[in-house]
Image 1: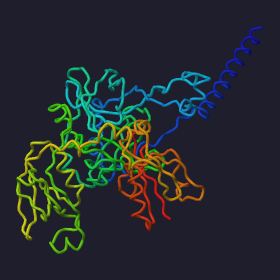
Image 2: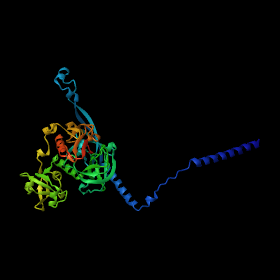
Image 3: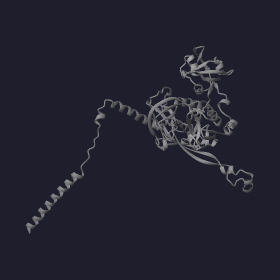
Image 4: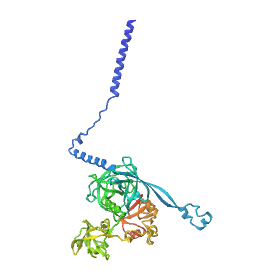
Length: 494
């Protein structure tokens, strides 16, 4: 009996040893730890790595310091839509049998929602954004990255430069420092921050591709061009330099799809500063003028006067009693610079003068009898008939604007007030129809709002008619399209 017990005990011990060994073996096979490589020896041995890490740290600090001042803007507004059925059946016969109200009201109001970006510039709650972001807004909500939200009011705006100054009620708010956009050069590093497609506080980087790009809708615009990724929703957000200073307000993109394609534009912050100062000082934007009629110079004239290829405009006339006359500017003078900045086209002169308020003393360089000299001109307020059209013209259009124009196999008509408001544009023509064999059929479609062609403003069908007559033999056409507050190009070559 005892031998049997001992035998059973020994068998049990033997079984445990065998089974334990199997588990140990199995664990060594199936539970082996993976050893990951954690270092890239080639890169880490590079002597330039320290420089790259320092630059990376600068980008991180920009994000940490600027993002708290960047805001997400949510806008609620209304759009007035005319009742198409009422207009169609606007006949005494129908009204007699069905009554005036049978086909509904004359117009409907549709609620609109939009999103954009902005950034706080003072601790007590002033902030910049784009005018097209908040245009016709009934309610504007501002969201900060720390979760706080405020309702904002529009203090003022400048439609010509697409800048809006907003205000929220707060104290000790995070602010974004403002730099000097005049110091920008091609190749400078920049960062764009905003809320594209409602992806809040998105951070993208790039470089300055060009400076001084002429306005696509207004003569008072000069854009910073960059390749930093900007998409719908980025509008109004800051463009920041490598020092962590805001040097621009992201405004528009050039695209054939409506999304980012490597080219975006920002309004220089120096323009925004001037706009904000005028809004807070005068309550509105006042643009100075000097009272001259200007003609561009051709290449032969520039060579004759030893001017650069992009320098100089000729004074074709001087208004009596104008600031120019008082300063001694004469017909036949060539204006070469304003405040030290080169002037090469009439648009350049309008930009440099118009972005200074009335009463400002401006230095103008004149070339007369092949001698250069400077005069100081005290700017005067622009005449009302030049500064803006009457409300009647805005609503109805002038007689020359009426009708339709056919161009490249497409029919264009004047844009209605509703279409302009819907696309945050001040002017333009709408494609009513396109023939199947038209070269435009591949790149454009009916309903698009065209505001420019080949760098020419197209304010109405009259402008388009003149453009078409002057460019009959042109082979390439680039159309500037306004859609939902964004601007983009589409081009053809025939």
